[in-house]
Image: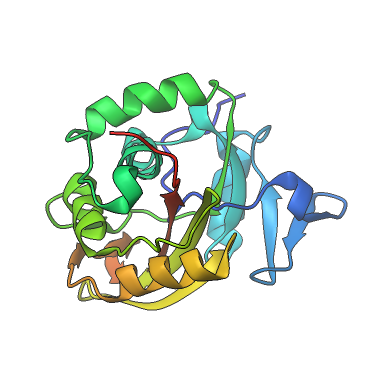
Length: 220
C-alpha cells in the first residue's frame, strides 16, 4: 500500500482529537463547522480519491511523516518563535535566525508519528523574506502587558488574499483576555506581505494560524 507523503497544509491547527466529535469515519469540528478526515492510516490512492472528489478544501489529520518538508519548516518556525521571541517581557527579537535551526528543535518535540491538523493546500502562503523576519516583526510590534502574571499561548488566525495581503484576524484559542488583545493588536498592526498560496496552479485565499507565547518569568 503506497503511503501518503509530501502533503502541504495551510496551517497547523491548535485543535486535537480530544476537541473533535467523532462519527464513523470522520470527525467534526465545532470551531469551523467542518468535517475532519483521519488520513493517518490511509493510502496515497485513498487520499487522491478523496481530494479529487471534494469540491471544497479538505481538513485532515496527518502523521508528521506524511507532510512535506516545507510545511514542517513552517510549523517549526512557529514553534521556535513562541519559545524564544518574547523573552524579557516580550521585547527581545527572535533568537533563532534560521528555519533550519528551528527544524532541529521540532525533531526533538515531535515524534515521527506525531499528528498535525490542517487544511490541504497545494502551495502554502509564505511571508516574503521568510518566517524569521515575520516573527521578528511581531516581536518588535508587540507590547507586553506589565500586569500579566501567568504564561500561556494565544493562537491567532488570519487570511492571506490572492495579492499576499493579510487580514480577517481572529483569536482561535485564548488563555488570557489581556494577552489575547495584545497579540491580536500586534498582528493587525503588521505591514507584512506574503507570497500567496496556490491551489491547482492558481493563487487562492488561504488561512494561517500562529501561536504567540507570553511568559513573565522568562530570563535573558
